Amino acid sequence: MARALTIRRAGRAGGRQRYQLTQNFAFVVRDSGVMVRVVVPAGTVTDFASIPRPLWWLYPPDGPWAEAAVIHDWLYSRGLLSRFLSDAIFREAMARYGVPWWRRAILYYAVRLFGGRHYGGEGWRLEAGDRRERES
Image 1 (cartoon, rainbow, N blue to C red):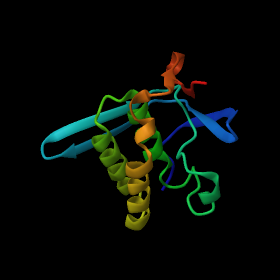
Image 2: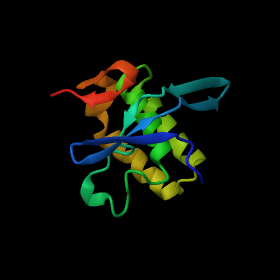
Image 3: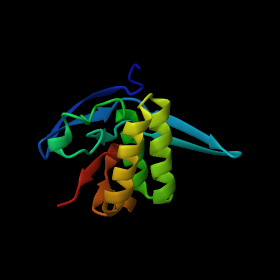
């Protein structure tokens, strides 16, 4: 599947390549009559999926889950939706972008088990252009 994101390189931080969205990126979820529209604004900086380096051979950060990871990171940085709903949207986005069910399950449960400390913007600040950067 072709990338839905329009990006440019934004340098490196913490040993990881960073990218900046050059256009807004929208994703819509509809379930049981409820619609949630997530818009990640142009200017947002991402490292795609925050997967530990030893696992990159199996789960590279820019794999087919990259779009879903950008949405998920944005939701976590803002803390506007519950963590559970943010993770459910991540799982749905991976399904829409063609990630096989078994990889979706592993990545979904990884964020459920290990993502909590990053939820709600704790330790993150949003700067001009809504760039996400780690506070020291």
